[in-house]
Image (cartoon, rainbow, N blue to C red; front, side, top):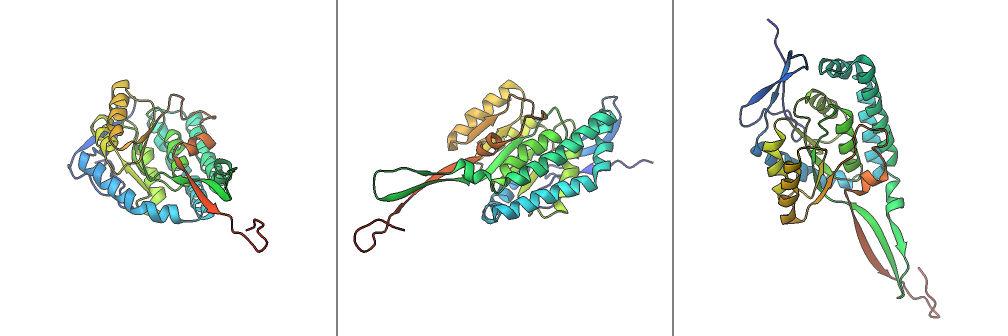
Length: 290
């Protein structure tokens, strides 16, 4: 008898079953039963947000270079498990060429964002001219916890394209994975669990977007939302619920699996700009100096 794998959630660095006890069948385009996935609940969303908030301070406190090293380690682990991702993508309907391109593009995107981790601050920050005897600096800072509705058109590359720009800036994430094709997302969770990513930095939920998104968008401890193309009514409801704590909501119209779906704007979407003033000390003789 074939025993199909049950893919669990990924919360706080652990792989718990959903508290609801529910699961659903993951099927191929031809109707083959491939695996079972947990059907996440509102309680699972709240648990994931709590784990993300607990991890956010220490993650943001790491040096940019350290975060770069950790993201690069994800690329190395993806490369090591490339065969497994290829098998899953093909089982979900991709041909070998398309699957290979998606995995390789995902690895490349990890390396790409690892390179950005200690550079975007210079481009987003500035020293501002002021009339008074002060230095005035603007610097980017992490928003906090980012809720992500992963791309529903791709199983892996879209996920990577949304999560990494938030991570390198010091944010932690709670991700609602591709509803119909969650296998690669949970396999990626196994990669994260065995790499250097601290528990709670990335939390992955599987199940119905329509059930979990309202809890995520209304949660007062979530600072921003990253939403891939989904049903228009769900997008609108998420925007309305985000108003209560002034969440920043980024809804992507462009395909997140495109070659161009990367770069500084994706990072700055989940950064706040903090401006500080520092008085210029006066040295003997009255001249301004440091």
